[in-house]
Image 1 (spheres, rainbow, N blue to C red):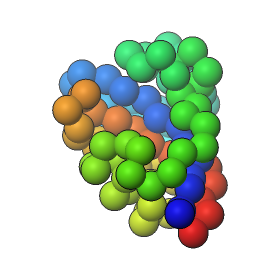
Image 2 (tube, rainbow, N blue to C red):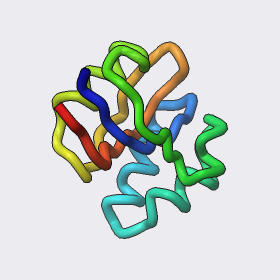
Image 3 (cartoon, rainbow, N blue to C red):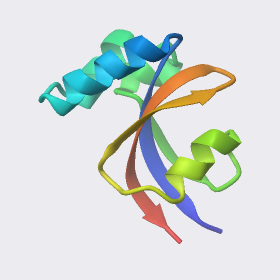
Length: 93
């Protein structure tokens, strides 16, 4: 079964998510932004979600994690929890 490692930032507003993405693309550290702004408990670890299998996360998350480019900031991705920025750090097919 495919597995991946990723980190994310969760916020409740799409525009806030876009603003944070621009900060990261302009050189801000993903982990620092996650610690400061993410509403997910993983924010304390810089947004690190560790390794997980396909199907463990919500569909919108899985669709990106198991198909998009590695080491690129993706999003905003809307889920039932809010808006995510997502960076896939590794994937094993």
